[in-house]
Length: 245
Image 1 (cartoon, rainbow, N blue to C red):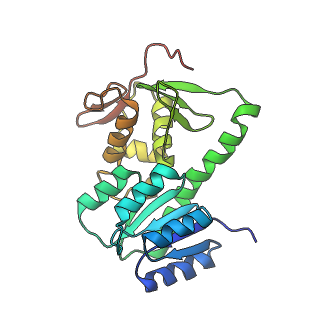
Image 2 (image 1 turned 45 degrees about the horizontal axis):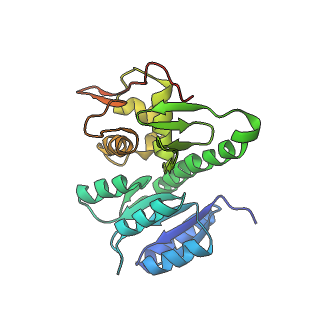
């Protein structure tokens, strides 16, 4: 029977897992549960989920380590769901590549909205990748030291190897390409990526930009492609002529 998506809930609190399984199941999602890292790895190997709801404070391997494991190996949405209140934990989760961050206790409807948002970004990549070769020519653009293929949603380094991108990171790069040499505020970036509900806290966009710079800039400490305009926002500066398009 078709579902709205497969969600893997990783939390050592059985009551939390059961509440999420019942609520998301009632909204048409297939829900799989895991209480620790070993169970999560087994579940992922058995059947890749669309989104992972990942607690940070787990017995054994911690959530940040598991998020890193997932991001390095799989194209899945990652939403950190935790009671940890420190900003450092939130920053670390987003820097690793989590797509969103939700604090406990959470409102179920808000969590559902965030799942839908991540799924929209994830699912938008599949049709583009499937039709890029047959339906239309590749559309490639220089972004710093890299090349972004907007048809297949892939980022390539100068030597040709692919650099993994989260769905949110692709959305940000696409917005920058569509608005070259234009200063964009954090508020505009959230609006243009259609992820207004995604913002978990004020520094979220800054963390995303910092992560993108580490991927596309020749020297992330001296960015040339995605520049900061102090007190205003960010601006994308394309090369004079994109010889890689």
